[in-house]
Figure 1 (cartoon, rainbow, N blue to C red):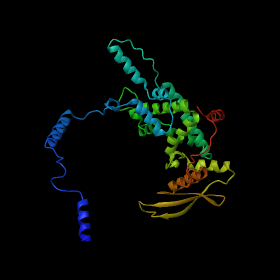
Figure 2: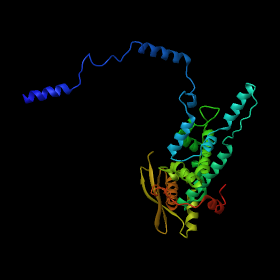
Figure 3: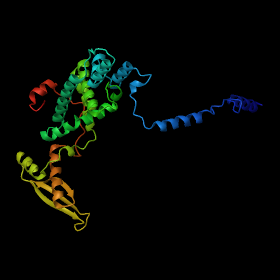
Figure 4: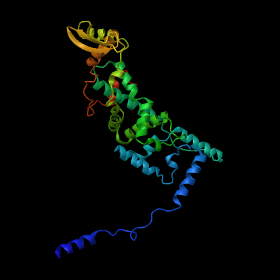
Length: 323
């Protein structure tokens, strides 16, 4: 009896199933409607992507607030709005006012001046960071890395990943690369105005300099004449001239030949390289010796992101190459 009672309780606890419970969730009009909509879209042809601000539920102030929260920064609302206002948008609004007979009188400023100040901050901080973390690397190769980081292509990529493409007020859509890069520079300046230069530099470090993580720095420091540059480097450090030595050859008379060449100085191997010919292997060995000396090879330590740097004003005063 006890077992039967327990089984009865278990059965009653299960939800009832069958045709009585639930309702029909499929409607006959769904498939014909979807077919009709699909046929209409095919007749219209490919459509240009619509800007996000044309949607009914768009709330620009809420999007600006969400943008600041994503970056975990406190922006001045007016400064952020100006940073995301492109000159083409103002010109378009003035043209529309003229067409309806209204004298254009928009008393708003675009982000042109802010982008110039933001560009100065980015260039200054990136150069200071690279000079501090790569002190052995010659200036011309630091300039190559800096040019890669502050290029419009890189800054536009960062801005797009942050979702700034939907926030920028611009006449053209999709937004061009130059406009994205200019707006990103303006946002950096807006943060400097809102929270101070230190906060702006921290954001540059986290967004721009962080693009070097996982990057091969040797592609930015490839010398034109490796042997001549290595000779100059060793001479400047009081070492003997480089001496190439053939270590091994594999498949010499085949299309898959591999030469192994070592570079020695003071009877110590300073570099080693491989190539399809002895000349190519020697060139790669010289490059390897230089990369080891400059500390940019694959064995380098990760870049430090908690490095304490001098204020930008002091660095700009001490560096004659800064803009």
